[in-house]
Image (cartoon, rainbow, N blue to C red; front, top):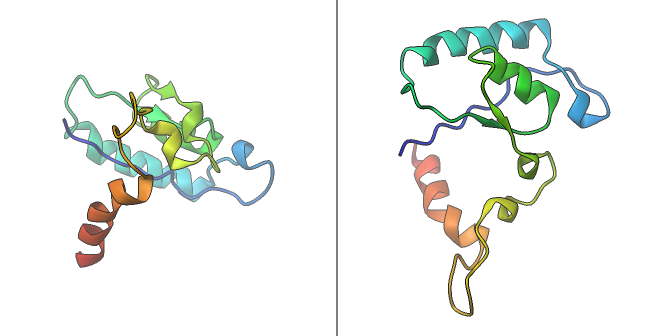
Length: 109
């Protein structure tokens, strides 16, 4: 399985946060990256976006087949996406311990 994290393109400032849309520049950014990604993604790619308008607009530059996941909303805790432990002593102890090896890798780039 490959995981690709694609941050939304440039968006306007303002409130409410979930309603913020892409700027004209952001629309161009999303289209350019979507064009680059389209030939590199497998056919069975699953695209999941937050309920924020800007993320939906960014994904729509690539396809109209994406899922909205409310657990990805701005301000939602990262642990909302982690499976709940099945019992004592199981599961990921914390988001921090799960992500720290990846963070170290990112910092070395």
